[in-house]
Amino acid sequence: MRDYAAAVAEFDYAATAREQLSGSLDALNACVECCDRHAASGRTALYWEGRNGERAEYSFAQLQALSARFANLLHSLGVRPGDRVSGMLPRTPELLVTILGTWRLGAVYQPLFTAFGPKAIEHRLGIAGSRVLVTDAGNRAKLDEVPNAPQIITVSGGQPIQAGDLDFHVALDAQSEQFEPVLRSGEDPFLLMFTSGTTGLAKPLAVPLKAILAFTGYIRDAVDLRADDRFWNLADPGWAYGLYYAVTGPLALGHATTFYEGAFTVESTCRIIREQGITNLAGSPTAYRLLMASSEEVERELKGRLRAVSSAGEALTPEVIRWFAEGLGVTIHDHYGQTELGMVLANHHALKHPVHMGSAGYSIPGHRVVVLGENGEELPAGQPGILAMDRKRSPLMWFAGYDGMETKAFVGDYYLSGDTVELNADGSISFVGRSDDLITTSGYRVGPFDVESALIEHPAVMEAAVIGKPDPERTEIVKAYVVLCPRHQASAELAEELQQYVRKRLSAHSYPREVEFIAELPKTPSGKIQRFLLRNQEIARQREAAERAAAQ
Image (tube, rainbow, N blue to C red; front, top):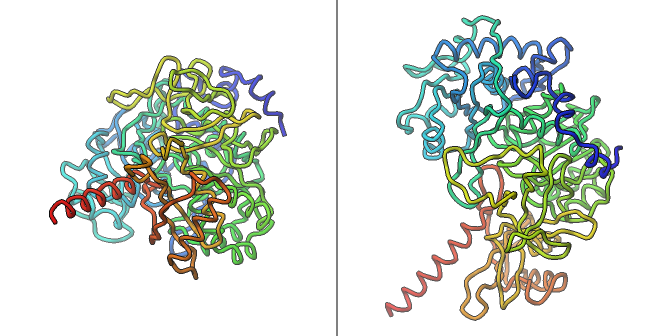
């Protein structure tokens, strides 16, 4: 295991580019980096399992030929380098062929999550201006409600396709397996992403080819993906963590990835880890909390099977960290990133450094993450502020702004993330919450994450979201929305128990003065809690109550 401080001190951008890329930063192709250069190795690139138990393996050489066919198909439809191609497919081999073939042509891939409805699709397609959209029979009907949809290619599954569509496999079979990859500059985009919509409408951002260096660095140093690992990233490639780190990062390193087409369940997750021999797992706190909620079954199935587990998407609670160590016998590490940045903070599996319980870790080599105060000054340990990237000293940072939109995210030499964090004495950084999620109550500032973490420690609580509810006396009061574990019933007594449970662990001003039990929390399709919707709901309730009182 390498020393973290040495890895940071020795990082060299030019040397990393020479080591990690087959091309140069002046002449790159993402399909070459993630497929072609590994084709002669004979290695497997994809292990796939379908929703009905079908299984298949694809080598890098097979994907090279299929990507060439798809690039020829796109070219015949008038797609040229720099054009956008959208994909709305489940985790199937056709999805990977679509991504790689788009890159082979030098075009830009734009992901559409399969749970999106017509309005979300229309919003993204309208901004992207995509020339082609690839989907499957199960999602095709949504596009009937999307005006001005581009040319549609449908993975039919043997079903009849609509007039004007192309059948994916029929069209692919008619193409040649030869297509010379189009080389582009490292500054040219290969992905068009949209933010997850945690705080509002999704914003577009173009990801340049040079970002591949950041993606491989994270997979190598933070995830610690080794040649003998079987790797599974639970995240859907319709979102950044899946597309960056279930597709681009591992494939660029010549390592196989795993796709499971079915929905997440505790049973299927345990079965695939066991049957596929998964040793290195990545995913979200939401998935890990669901595994912990079925701890007895999961421990019986998985204890001792996993070597390394990584978490991203939201802060990881101490309770989950302890359960993985004690219940499954494996270290789970928290990591932090954004669609705009990729992953930039991590408790590294492959680098030696102290691990501060509850922190997101340290800057990944090639990045410099700092905590800024209200006046733009870098804050010392113990003072909460905004997580920021030092652009001058972060050679792997690739985000330069939203595609065609103005942004206030850049101030001087810094990119401001919008997340409130705190620097710890050991140099690690702990997540506090979105800056607009912070609660001001009776003059105190309360981070929702600390309260949520305390609540989740209680055996009755599966998930929790904490907001500031407007209050005329205290400015805001702390309110908790709680999802209970199976076999636990909501009651006034349990609400009181949870309040006292948090009060004893935190402080008199931090405990939730109101607890509301709900069936599920509002989340983005990628699994992030949308606290702003809960706040808006409270404001609407108060407004309605005031209007009723005035009418009486």
